[in-house]
Length: 201
Image 1 (cartoon, rainbow, N blue to C red):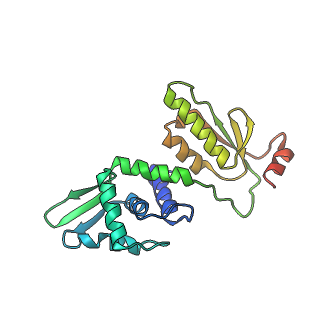
Image 2: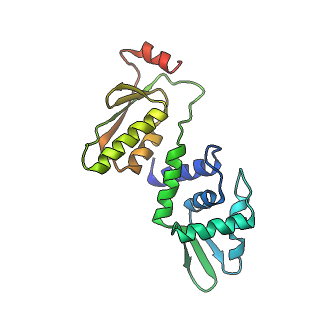
């Protein structure tokens, strides 16, 4: 998955997943993560009406959008770029993009297919203990894959029966530890029957 497609998946899941807390601020961030919005100066007050129209789950009042916009701007999560005297571009800052990824990380889930393809995904990582950032990344990664339902075969070897590469790569990229992980897809495990029972297969 390319970085562009990965971000688009984050945006789509973030905007339309029922697991994401529905606030106007989070919706604005997710909507802008799909790309900058260009509006005319005259139509600028109608920007959030347009964003609101694209919401699949919720409708927000003008006051909710206004407060959310002011708060996001104050926190420097969004910025307004004047292209000329008539047009403005509303876009996320780097901090805004990071905030969207953080929200998505907290609500990340793996979609289970209706039918198992009888293949196992083996996730292996060997992240250094130092510097401290790597130690924190390792602990956060371990906690997240446990939350996602992976079974720990050995200290840094985990198994899962469904496709999960995109989700794992997203987590690894979030912590900048891509080079310390590996994902294998295998058709047979030595103690497969035991693990099948764990996953109710």
